[in-house]
Length: 612
Ligand code: MV4
Image 1 (cartoon, rainbow, N blue to C red):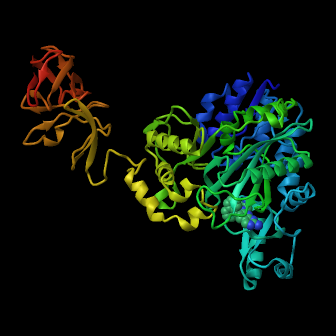
Image 2: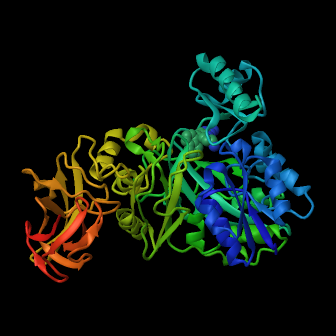
């Protein structure tokens, strides 16, 4: 096994990989950019190195910087996580040819072969994995016409180097051929440096099913079941789950076995995901499953660990990242296919720092004023956050993943509702309110949603309402912008506890939400005592006297007669409604009289002390 692994990534996935290393007793090296100097992942690693400026191309994507850092740190392997360099065959090749450093992933040859879509289709087809009827690379509009004569419309024109929704154009009638062909070529060139395109029959409203596989260099290939990623927004997955509730047992087995066969034929090793489109039955009723002879088609292979691998870990109990490291070190997979048992149901909720009510606009900054993640049975949090952190906006908007497990889909849904109700993030917007909405949404709860459900069917007004109902989580809760301030208080009425929000028009507070109750009534010529840093105003100066601004109990008195105090000094502490309030000197002076001592009960307006 390796001694030390460099994790060429950031955020939650870097933490995920570091944790797997720790579980295996392996040392860990983090890399970070200028933007991530205080990055959450840095805290978890044994050592950390700055690899360059905020711009990813100059840091996390800098081949030489990463490889040099691995050598400098004495790391004997590089794990790329997902995104950044994870599917870059050229980089994998460079690592392979670096002495003493191992690439934790498939061979660069396999990455290259499966990265080219028509090659991947050929490999799968040779292994008897069904592929969407389609072509080799084409050049001319006439090739599209010929294809249409045999297969009809709609037709997908796809970029050879494409994936994840980029470089795909749909042709619905002959008149669109020229335009869409040119557009697909342009996108392929722009995104993937490759203007080669090919055709496929376009499947309307499919389900997106993907199969997790893990393989070693000794010819062992196992599938770890499927995930259903049909809930997407503009090709971005938002909730993933497993197993799929749409597949019959026979159909499921067929898809899983096809994935295993295809990966085996490709001579692939390490973790990978085989994506399929499954033809949905538009009349399928809730609870009904697609039958055994439903058509399904290979789409592409993702040659990396994926964001949603956690779903599979929860239902199989297998630590996929640990197995990535083991097989990269040359170990043989220690379990048979028949040892892989599936337990219950899991869902992953991507916690993106986005405002769902504003077309999922990514947050442009902010500080995590509150970060209070959920817990309890069935709940797993993968994140790299801590309360007080500033949001880093230089990379993607996903800040955490909530993964929930239950013995069946029902229990998983109930626990998910509970966990998302517990989850409290303030200071930045997140899509938590959107997730809460989805857990009450008919088609999602029934499992009849498809890949275009969010883009075409879900009413955006419902998203806006959900966001409003839960408050604008993330926006500064203390200030309404119009001078109105909101205080959160806990009170007891007849011994029963209530959390209340108190709105004070126009009253300045210190922003900590702990201003003393009753403060809103201050006025009539009295001077408000000014809170020092973190000090709360609980007394008012009337003449030379400092008075209690609310009823409560004196917890401590910090001054005696004759003491000199400066403006802002904490004179005493007044407990009211279970909160401690610092009473601060409204101005500098000498204490001429102390009227209270620790333990005294005081009423609003009572004199606490006098100053001269
Ligand atoms: C398709 C398709 C329908 N027919 N190919 C989108 C992302 C890229 N990985 C492939 N994609 C699709 N390819 C054919 N022949 C529909 C999609 C597609 C999709 C696929 C998976 C998950 C979500 C999707 C959303 C829209 C379109």
